[in-house]
Image (cartoon, rainbow, N blue to C red; front, side):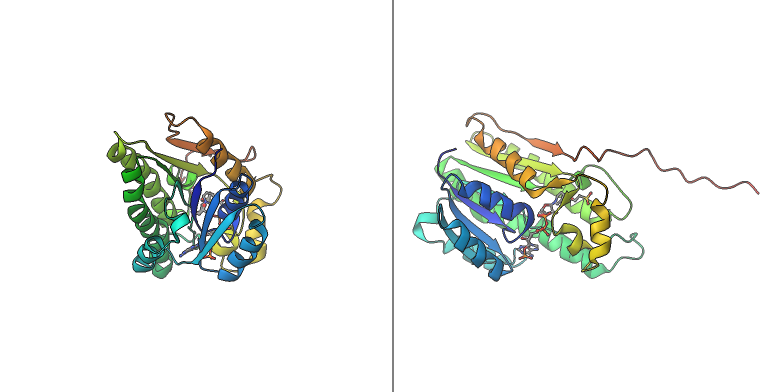
Length: 255
Ligand code: NDP
Ligand code: 8X3
């Protein structure tokens, strides 16, 4: 992998952090963004030994902030080679008729609109240079339904289809687009979903060997290492301890 400029959203934890560490091993220039700037500073201090790291406190839901962050990148970080659209979250697991509507809006604003903003503001430079790679983190939840997945799964279905549609728009350029759909992975994801109920979050992974953030980072490494004429479109991955379930059937008990 040659040295490149990588822009990562959600680099303060989980997949984004693991990808930052992975890219730092080859001396890439890293733009690391998230809301928790203290965590970004720590990561910057750690990775600066091998990489040139620029951090930006950024909430991807803020369209103007995203535009400003990309427009005001220091010169040496300006030509983004890889955009890792990773920032995202699930909130709650309640059935649709009981959810907090604010949670739905937060997921739409982050997982859909945030990803849209980053893509839209980075893409013109990639097209002008006729090179680049957009990697979107979707989820198995965007391909397969489960109870309580309602809007979270819907946002990830958007990410998957948006990725495919980007490929159509970019045909004729050398800009690549990849959508990665991981299943259950142990990160801060469930702590966020269950809003600090850490026992409930831990229960998600109990007795299993889930995917870890490093597994996703290794997959990203493989995806970006393909020869420039190869585009990995969509890649679904799961822990060996996860698979699909049968259709659920509601049976009325005979009296
Ligand atoms: P984590 O909760 O560990 O990390 C999420 C990251 O997203 C954090 O760095 C967080 O940073 C950032 N983030 C959240 N909201 C915003 C925001 N509004 N603006 C900027 N950054 C934000 O979860 P994962 O690493 O597991 O999740 C990464 C992606 O992978 C998400 O899109 C998730 O939906 C997806 N995914 C996760 C799976 C899993 O089982 N873990 C499986 C499949 C997909 P901060 O809070 O500092 O802003
Ligand atoms: C995260 C995986 O199954 O919790 O996207 O929705 S799942």
